[in-house]
Amino acid sequence: MVIRDTIFADAVAAIDTGDLVKLDGLISQYPDLVCDRLQTGEPGYFADPFLLWFIAENPIRSGRLPANIVEVAMAITDHLDALAPPSRQSQLDYTVALVATGKIPRECGVQIALIDALIGRGAHPSGLDSTVAHSEMDAARRLTHHGAAVTLAAALALGMDADAQRLLPQSDAAAKADALVITASLGLASAVCTLLNAGADPNLRSMHLHAHSTALHQAALNGHDDACALLVKAGASLTVHDSMWNGTPSGWAAHAGHEALAQRLIPGR
Image 1 (cartoon, one colour):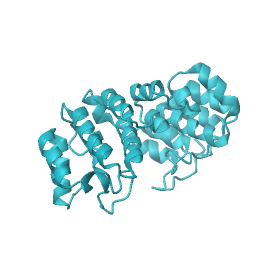
Image 2 (image 1 turned 120 degrees about the horizontal axis):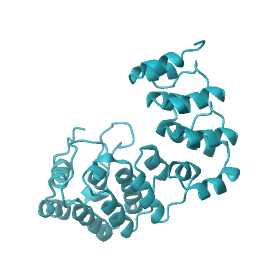
Image 3 (image 1 turned 30 degrees about the vertical axis):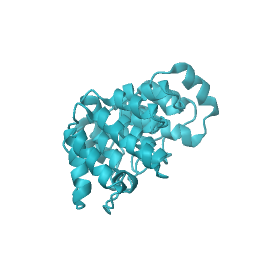
Image 4 (image 1 turned 90 degrees about the horizontal axis):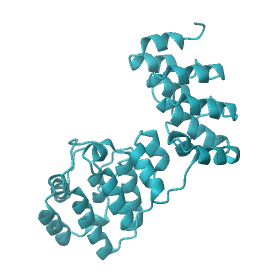
């Protein structure tokens, strides 16, 4: 990402280096830094970001975070508290989701501390399904510890059997589709089997996660043979194309280097 706003770029650089003095000075001089979104015109989940979002390093820019990133996040939050922009709550909530789904906070050993600190300042524990979909299981467990509502997908991915059994009978087709695409992507064959036995449609796409593809696309991409076999046996289409790259499940497997699996997913083989 190219940041053309030089003042905003200086503030992001201060975040990246953990320079609390510089960051505090910039925000004190230019309070709009924490109130307004950076207009980038770029699409995606990081479109027109707030400054606070940059503490998550998600998307990855440098692949590292300063050791004092929790203090940096709290310094920005202090200014948000003082200025009280209408976006304060949504900024905190979305930042928690970025931290929880990002691998750099985990690799830097600050993911849980950041989640705790942000929720301690009023953030809601957000993004649970996306967190398990990104295989950030420790972060997902921390979100549930802080009161995130357990979904069917999260219960199955986290091995919360009692919750899964409680939620399964009351889950609609959409919830089952969310859970199926996540568990297939993660290669959780037992969970995939549970969902299929409970009537999950192997061809129904999730509206929230990997919506451009089917559960079979996701299992194929990640080389999960057992999950693929279960989905195919249940009637998952081998000829369906994803809506982003126009590829079949076999094509996705081949693209990821899973040649033997790609061959097995060719119709008629």
